[in-house]
Image 1 (cartoon, rainbow, N blue to C red):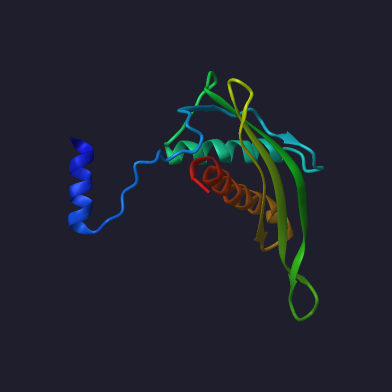
Image 2: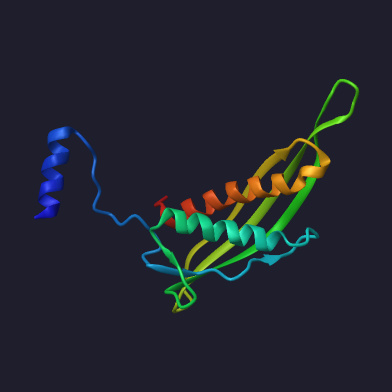
Length: 153
């Protein structure tokens, strides 16, 4: 009855409705262990993992639990921070961070559901504010990961 009401409402008001599930994972819960860090940047694995958990919880389509239907494994493959823009005198004005992460999501039967390498970058203004740049790039890469897990491609 509800589907009929939604279809009639959508036809009347000209909206598009899909009966496909929101998540291509087709699971309700996900375990996310701390990502492996293959870079020289100490502690970035904890920041990236924490941000991904936060974004998945914000999205709300999949719960993050210890005993879950699937596991999201991640590897931080590349981290680089370097001067990006300069002022007229040749002083560094802005730094750039590049981050590359590999994710593999497997169900209980160890079948791969999603496997993808994701890259993102961010900038920060002065050398002492690298942590802010890491926070921003972690947020950006987390948004891409959530889209990779929840949206049909």
